[in-house]
Length: 373
Ligand SMILES: Cc1cc2nc3c(=O)[nH]c(=O)nc-3n(C[C@H](O)[C@H](O)[C@H](O)COP(=O)(O)OP(=O)(O)OC[C@H]3O[C@@H](n4cnc5c(N)ncnc54)[C@H](O)[C@@H]3O)c2cc1C
Image 1 (cartoon, rainbow, N blue to C red):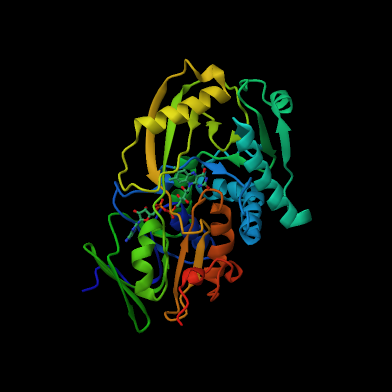
Image 2: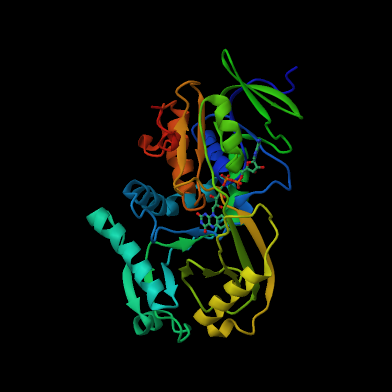
């Protein structure tokens, strides 16, 4: 028995990726239904560090570097559209970002990364500067003596990520999408004329389906002839009490939110499925933060959390439409904050236009297929 009316298009997953896509589809005149999980589902979208970040991305993958740079350049216009459709200012700040090195070895690795991307992209590369301690201190006087130097990239920045999440949800509804929480899709059955989506909540027939279910895409994608492998990757973040403004830029490991609290992060753990935070990791994160900005030493950490990234084996997104089941696509990525502008304004348009490949077919999951001999 079908419990919901038939739908033209259903987006499975209402995290940042699904909400950005549904917002973009609704902006193109469609009325997508978003089926989302439970309140306590693991959501990278509620756990992230909120950077709009290009620095160091796309080493050995110039197509990803270009895709990320394009998103960062689109972000200002995107923030304006989101404000128009939701009434919510997502607090975009693109004043530039620093990666602070606490040793010569770190400095060498990070300088090599940005220089390798710049060399590959040539004149398309965004500006960056490799700065020593004194040059860094001129721009950021609060740094500690342990900061050996930094990489600075003017295109980097941040947003208020929870406000972005809320704004996309409000905006997509205002534009004509519908949202249904507590609606985990457990099974997708391809049918003549579409896809039957099933869960404990009931069933719905969808003419088209977009998989944006984060890590659960790995389970769902094969039901429509796609594959979406992921790796376990957990990140942890600390947040301090509010402080007077001292760092107006972003950094890969620290940012002062517009409300004054300092976010410190983020770690990478590959071998755990526990969502609990670890005291050892908090100690390392806090120690690095204090070496970078000694004035943080007396500041209290108010809370910390951990989240699982949506990370493919090579860290790049998967965007693919199913050749065997036309009308089904998968969209997933790490860096869903940075790439939100591309998902909402470019990928959603391609899906609305019934393109059979997404983003120039540069990020298909076929790259993970094992060749059959
Ligand atoms: C610690 C950390 C730091 C990060 N920092 C940054 C950063 O600074 N900048 C940046 O750009 N990105 C960052 N990211 C990445 C970014 O948060 C993610 O790329 C993004 O949130 C992914 O969004 P998503 O919608 O794909 O996944 P999720 O947020 O995980 O959402 C998936 C959604 O799908 C729903 N769902 C799952 N299964 C089903 C199902 N079967 N049926 C229906 N619904 C389902 C879930 O309920 C959930 O709402 C960070 C991530 C982490 C964890």
